[in-house]
Image (cartoon, rainbow, N blue to C red; front, side):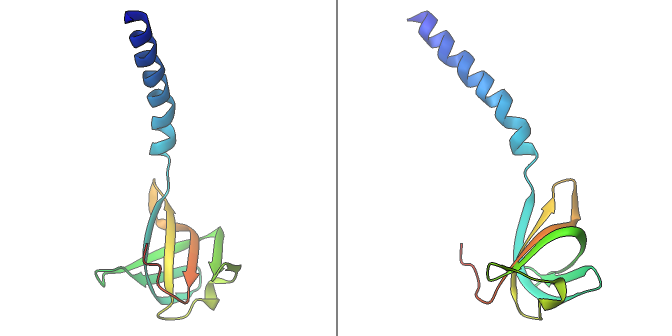
Length: 104
């Protein structure tokens, strides 16, 4: 019985040890509405109407209603989900735009 419990604890410890770096490397995401999008910059407002500006990475994946698009295709008022790297929240690496607000 003691061996079995020790084995379970050891397995859980290894799983946690492996999962922590993966969880720490996750990207940040936030949602809001486009104010402007041009010249490699996205200006948006969040749910508290706070304005923020992101530099859009040259290799950022940008989609609108699931289809690939250009930054300049994102017009004022469009709903967006922006993903930034955890170590640099000012640089957008992905922008998912939608004509409808995501209520998730």
